[in-house]
Length: 481
Image (cartoon, rainbow, N blue to C red):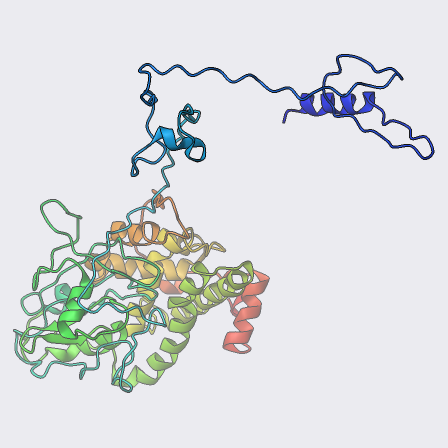
């Protein structure tokens, strides 16, 4: 009803007053209809109700019912009988209902890059996303198939076969390892198949990582499944175990001789791969004497791995996937407290690596997160209290040295894969799947290996400094640096 209609009705209601009742007399309330005349005592005469005269119906053919020509019957599934209208009274005309305009079609906006469902023989959605559900007791290694973790014949070149380095699996980081084929001389031993960075499926990881299917489906840097021509990574998991329950994560190492999955846990592969094939490598192979877990540094490496995984590697995900302001405010300071500690640690040991002159697995663990930090985590995960290139000069030089000078790091780092993996698969964080152009350049050039003349810096946000004290005791890096 229009506002003008409301006002008009209000004026009309004021114009008529209710009749006043005399004692012991009956009050008559007239209907609000046009009054033609007034009665003998000045009151309105009650008029007879107006009944429109029915229009005579003349059928085109006397004696036969007249079918309405325009339109369609109300119920197309049932034969229309106009002579049965009006409760079965024959001869009554049939009036078609008024035509209403068709509503405008509604086209919901689809989620970007949502794959069509593809179901394996026995699909299963884990109750705990990110952790496989192993029936019948505990597996040997949580987070991977319950196999031994190593091939039965690691000394033969026809065993491992399938893996995908350098990109995060659902919910946790994956690690580009110097022990990959192009650093350890394993190109002829381990074949490499690389999944596309997106799409990765729904919130529970279904249907998961996909391989390209050339020639129609091609993605630069990704390859088809060289072993089984699978479309999805979950097909590889179910090939190993039809009853597998859990996430279909990467990387995966496959034993071609035993025809089973060896391992899908990044940290265990990082510890095992560098020396697993020493017995068959040529003495002149690159990285033949590589030892990322030297005996004299093992206790230090183990200590660093604890806080680095908890506060930095996993910390960026806790901040990025926070669903409340409180969780976000609580998790972001932890990330920068860990970066402050890493900045001080590299400077204290003199570089060019975290523990000094020897490359170890802590460099590999840290690289996987730091190389993505400015490119993805600052914007996508809102870890924006600082950047590596602008706020951490020691970490920045350490990062550039690994990327430009140490074989295996640059070769297993694909910034397009990294950026699109995050921006085009996290629908809740980036629903339009727009990938930013920056930063530019992805990796700055020029490396200064004289770490002694670098002046380390830290983020001095009050929440970060307070978190440092909570996590790392009385150490105050901001004062010491």
